[in-house]
Length: 279
Image (cartoon, rainbow, N blue to C red; front, side, top):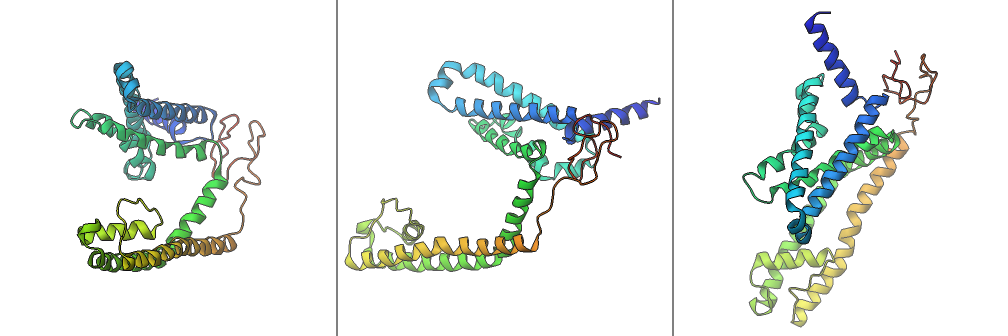
């Protein structure tokens, strides 16, 4: 075997382990990776607790760096074994993998930036692939398509809401004035947005009868503001579910010639039971 052949063989084996979850080895790798992601995220959260940080700060820092080095090596191996390197780099998972290791290195320059490592939690989305929850992925596609189909309507609606917030905020600034907390138009717009979304922090409130009347109208309007985008997306979800028939995520005739295992995913290339090629 030529050196080049050995190199390609190693690259192919790494690809099967890292990128293919329908092989026993790949499945074990992904499960270990999920545990590592959970533990590293837990460590970051614990470090933010002052009592824990003061007592175990050094050990938590060491553990964070160990996880960061492990994930860095994993990222480099993914770059090496990926069939389309740049395709992986700019893919959703590729960007998340990169962003999950950068904060620790940035913490050498900017204090507290390591807490941004909680972005690693996004890597847990691989659980859908590892645990064969493809039906949930299909449903997420329906939801994504629904948002895309209604984005124009939602954009127009949000623009109208912004106009209402600006107009009502300006009116409240004129009606209430600075003595009641409406010290500027931007601050009055902030109050209008808080009121329309029915959050109601209570840090600013109208004192005059006219201001309270306007606030009442804005509160009632807020319930409609919450309901409209929900209805828009809901209609699109219903349309997509009617237009997209329920599909079985498992291949009907995909049978492993080596062990006879069935119920593989339609796009599976290797048997998830024995790892043999499905041909």
